[in-house]
Image (cartoon, rainbow, N blue to C red; front, side, top):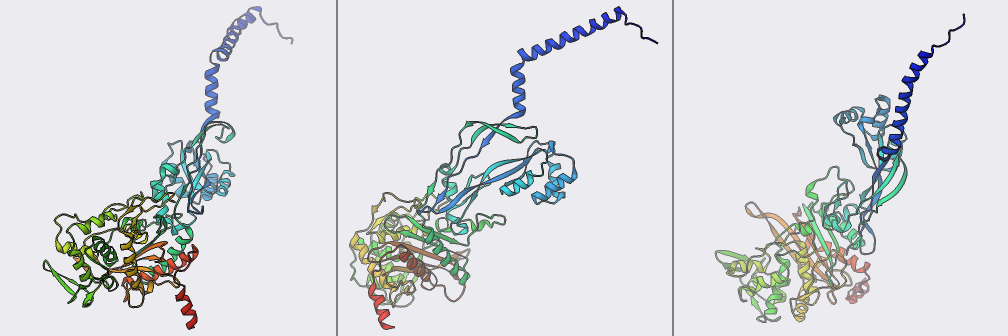
Length: 562
């Protein structure tokens, strides 16, 4: 049977219906193409063009010779958009395994942040791990370039250098105090991404990234390793609570080494004990004890009221003041200023200071830097405690003369000893290389020269610091052994052992101060515990720095006697 031809009326009705639809479609096309073109282009760009951060490198911290102490290494950060992750359990299990997580922990974390568009999967991973994760080709998983702070010297320089957080913001040490100098300014770039959020092409740099500035320290990493090794050995040997050492350039105040024990590894802070973070050399305070006596004697000589050959009667080895008794180890009888230093006579130095004007000792202590920070700018550096000069009692003046009744940091003590090492001139401590030393004259050079001669006797046979001697070099120094303070006053049987010294004594190049807190055992005096550390560290340092010996006769005598 043949088909009947369509009715003309029906065709016209269809045409009447189609033509308006066609015109409407054409009009919409014209509208979108001409009137909404810019809007649609922007919407398309929003879905394909992105502005991404452009990472910048944080400044490097180096020692004085350019050896790296803190560097930023390129790493990758993995993140995800939970709403775009697939529901495929096998894929997500593979992702959890690649990230080093159990499936249960991973799924729990995803469920916790299911309503977010961004979560970190793992920050600062190696490029190899990032590549392994991205090779799974899981939708909604992305990777970004970042930098991670790394500390090549590890715990050897940790207290001084400090560390940053995961975002490379300074948290401790010089990383914190110089954060404004080291920090980088990230840039911005426009990129083209595919539907899975992967960068297809870098299109343009919108804002250039600016790296941080490098920081060069005064530290000599060779000497830092040396000081670290010797200090750790003695703290372990004597089962001490802690220990610190500072090594200074006597000519300009540069810190060549600064080490504390116990230490920490800034590259692995998973199980960090907060008590290990303190840079004890600049933050902890202590009573210096007998190591301050050479400075007290220098004040007495500087006053003009005492001469180097003057005799002070210390008999009977006791001095009663204000109901208290100052004692010597034994009755030393008549002593010169040199004998007071060599025998570490509390009575002798107290008698000298009590004959001076009331405020003179405190005035000089203040000039030496006690009671105020050393000027390093290290975060949290302590100021110490120095009593006022007016209306000060006799017993207070007496105890101050042999190192009790005031507190200071190891840095302050080392700074004061530089005055003895550099002809009476005071240098600010510096953790950075010094171009032009700034000094102030405290003592007359002749006074300092006389005190140095007295301090040499401390290290020679018959003195308390013979273990600080260095073969081939003349050494000037002073030992100290201080009772620690507890809740009930000074603790019997608990001591702080110290030694402060200068070498070579004929032309000082190095100043070093060692403190050992609570050595356990029969040896606890500064001359027994701290002095040997000085000898080993400074002895090796002088040879590393190629400082010529100033006592060659000692070497010749020893060789001839063998």
